Structures are given as C-alpha cells and as structure tokens.
Image (cartoon, rainbow, N blue to C red; front, side, top):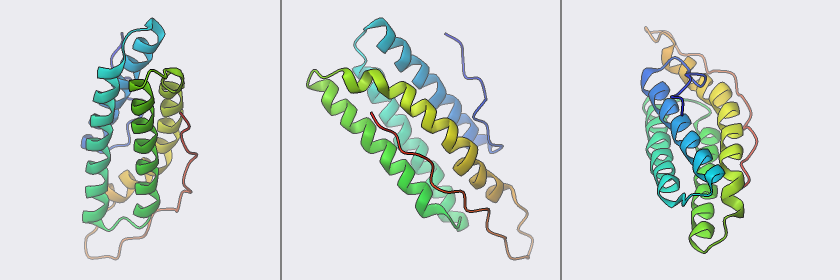
Length: 147
C-alpha cells in the first residue's frame, strides 16, 4: 500500500499532516473492505482520527475568528455522525454501509479539503499586522456524505 500522496495539502503543516493520516486510514479501510476482512479496528481508528482532526481544525478556527467556522463545523459533525452510524450498523452485522463509506468519505474529503480547508489555510496564512483581516470567500458547504 502506498503512503499518503499529499494531494490534500493546504499549506498549513499541522492540517497537512492530519490530511495525510486521514488519506492513509481511508486507504487501509478501503483495503479491508475489498479483502472482506474485519474492518472494526480500522473503522475505530478512522473515527478517532476524524475526532482529533476536526477538533484541531475547529480550535484553529476558534482561536483566529475564522468567519465561516459554523459551516465548517457542521460539515465535520455530519461526517462524524455518518462514521458513528456505520460503526453501529457494522457492529450489528450490517456491512452494506461500510462497503460504501471509504469512497463516500474520500469524495467528501477531496471537496472539503480543496474548499473549506483551503479557505481556512488561506485565513491562517494571511498577514495580520495591524490591518483588519479580510474574510475569506464564503465557500458554500460542500455535499454531505451518505453511508
């Protein structure tokens, strides 16, 4: 299995590292699903990662007054809800939602990283020397993930 590609890099080292981790975990989950292996452990690692990943981004948004933080947080919450629901159903023996999860999260992740996270990175990297910061463009909330 190849390592992270860096294709989800946004120019903020801490976020880029989390994006690499996420890409790696999604590749692991895809491989487990394709092999028909028990995916419970990697699914839990993905949930734990997403919780930590989203908490980090949300702390950055809160500490810098990122204007579209509410929309960004709602996207995070939606994805976590889906992952938790897929975990619940998988634990009950329903593997069908899990079979669609990696592809759905990857599709969402690509859109989210290139829009919402890129706007956050632009905000974080903008100079703040005494001038009022200009809000980044209000990229609309991207599509939801369906498991």
